[in-house]
Each structure stands twice: as C-alpha cells, then as structure tokens.
Amino acid sequence: MTRHHDQRGKASFPRTLRVNQVLRQVLAEEIERLADADERLRMVTVTGLETSPDLRQATVFVSSLSDEAAEALTERRSRLQRSVATQVRLKRTPSLRFEVDPAVVSGGRIEDVIRRLHGGGEEQ
Image (cartoon, rainbow, N blue to C red):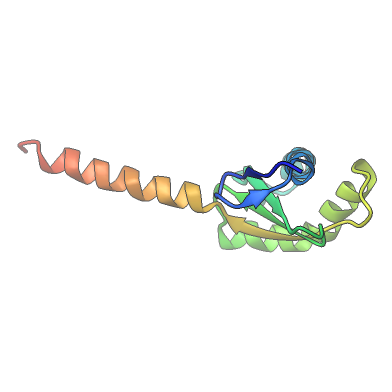
C-alpha cells in the first residue's frame, strides 16, 4: 500500500486521505447549515480533518475557535456525529474533536511579523 503525507506531514494511506476529505466536506456543510441558526458558528471554517488510523477519533481543524464557537461545537457534537453516520458509510463513526488549525495560527504569526517589519521601515 502506498503512503502519502497529509497537510501536517504525517504519513497516511490513500483510504484515510479519502475518508478525511469526505468527513471534512460533510462537517463543513453541516456547520454551515447550523450557522444559519447559531451565530456563534458563523466564523467557523473547517480547514482540515485528520482521523486516527483506527477511525475511532477525528480531529477537525478549524480556522478559528473562540470560546463561544467552541461551546457551540461542543453542544452540537452529537448532531455533527449523526450527520457523519448518516452520510458516510464507515464501520464506526469517529468521535469528533475540534482544534484550531496550527497552519492558520502559524500563518497569522508570520503575517504579524511581516506587518511589523513593513511598518517599522516606514517613516512616520
């Protein structure tokens, strides 16, 4: 079996990559639907998803995760898992965990540094 590397550099198998893509799409669409009724979820964007090799756990990476958004996702976790269970044929439905995407955090830090460097070189 061929191994690939996901966006975080970890080795994974093609099936896992496909499962990650499908789950990411299902959850992104469901969170978008939920955001219509729950404004705490309006700024939540699913940027990636990583399942454990046994598919029991899935870490859902989001662009930002305020306290209010984290609370809303926790309250809606069972509904999101049901959506996965009904839309994706898997032996078991993974337990969902939500985290801020480290790539987004890193990118934000880089932008801050660039802004400071750019702003520090101008005369005021």
